[in-house]
Length: 236
Image (tube, rainbow, N blue to C red; front, side):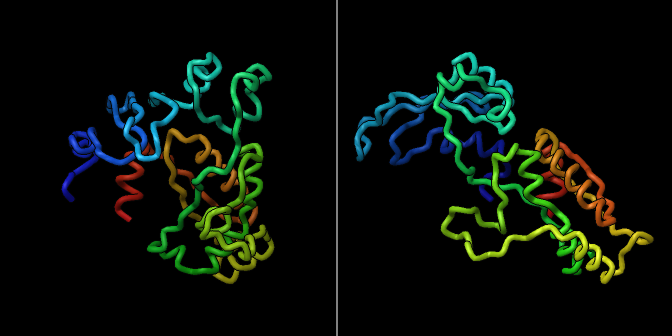
């Protein structure tokens, strides 16, 4: 590693003054605050029509939403709650709203070094106990899509022939029984996620409720993002 950490990365002059072949060049750079891009006159496909693009770093979606409503932003994202419940006709007149799938997904990852999860029957039982569509409907007000596997629908790698996993609580209970778990000896584990993301915390609570139906006791641990990375993600 040439750079020890993220702070070193941001101190590097190469990262603050990048040289590329894009249609814009960096005009100004303040870490965690602003990035200003200016149209590159000699761009090989012709100078862009927009002279300057100004990225502002805002602390949370609520702040950007308020600035959107005050017409202080040209472009921003909306949360499912905002688009479903918090915009009116005036807002729709001021902005063109484009809704399309994000190039991102959220998943629950099993720690396969943990003896509890080495049995594939356990993993299958947990998987088929979950109602994924219910998660999409509750967390995203239906503005989302169940992702079957690690490749996004619409991407070149997505397998259209893959059979979606369907909730089957009876089979899940049977698989747990075969693995040695029942009401008298319930399967239990903790799920860890990060603060600052209400969607993930709410998802964990829904999973907790769904898994309870097959007799699984799921605890929820919430950690600050950097601590989550340092103690859970990076070591594994």
